[in-house]
Image (cartoon, rainbow, N blue to C red; front, side):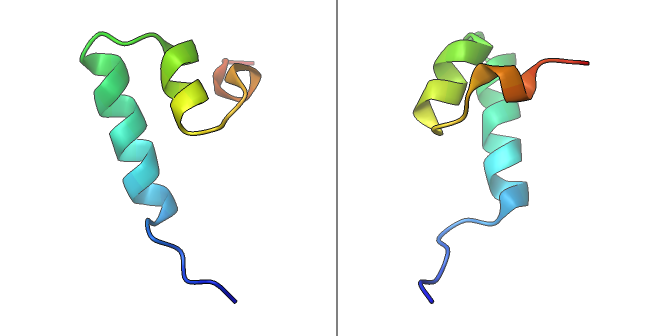
Length: 42
């Protein structure tokens, strides 16, 4: 198997920091290849 570069925790922290810095959730999700529907509150 291929070794993962970043842990899930590191990715989440980077996403949250980007959003707190003023980027939109949609832009951040696009950068990390997530659909923004996954990030919405239910």
